[in-house]
Length: 117
Image 1: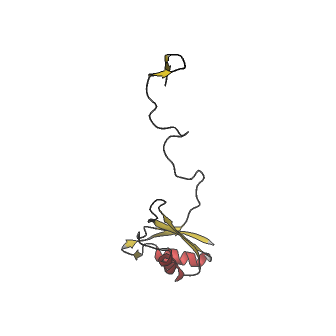
Image 2: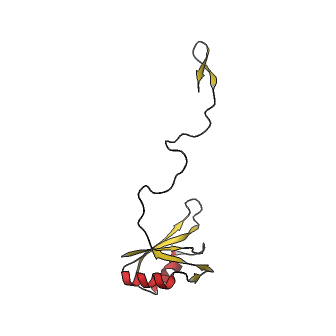
Image 3: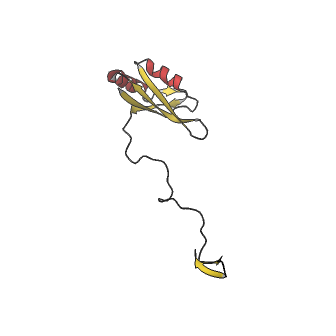
């Protein structure tokens, strides 16, 4: 089993069109087209799993740089995902938002007091 990265895909590409490209070189086990979580639109890359490593190597050699849908494909063996993953960004530990600055007045049960933000 070999996992292949396919990049620079036309945003109109579907799993079926990608599968048909690779089936010319051997048996395709699975095609995973990456889509945007919010819009459902293609993100321009996919992963293809082929059962036979030699067939996968032939497909990589033949399809890398080939013009599909007006774009030159980037096809190579997928690297394993690094630990830690991606995603997120922002500050560690949550938080965020404006919390005021300096002193503010707070009503206690009996009187107004000043306290740090």
